[in-house]
Image 1: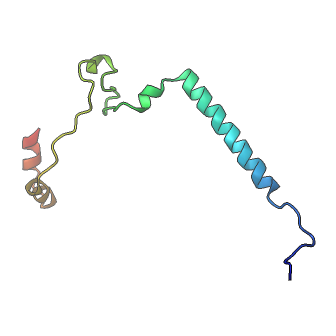
Image 2 (image 1 turned 180 degrees about the vertical axis):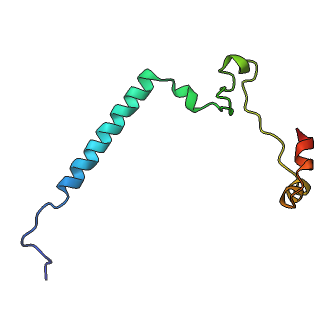
Image 3 (image 1 turned 60 degrees about the horizontal axis):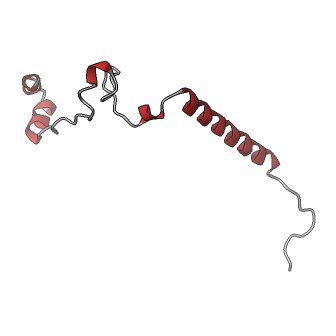
Length: 91
């Protein structure tokens, strides 16, 4: 009537210790990363050559990320049909 009151014990001690260990490890890795790195590098955009926008010597004059114009439906249809001349003329 009152539910299981006999033989109760803590069953999640190992999981609790693993969770606390994870939290301590995460905090330690975060402190190490912030003290030995530059968190700003996570906020900027990078190109395929490893140049950060406005950060690398080649891109100091370009502080913003470039978003190219989205492909048109015609271009996508040409590429899907196997016609790659339309793609080459864009570059």
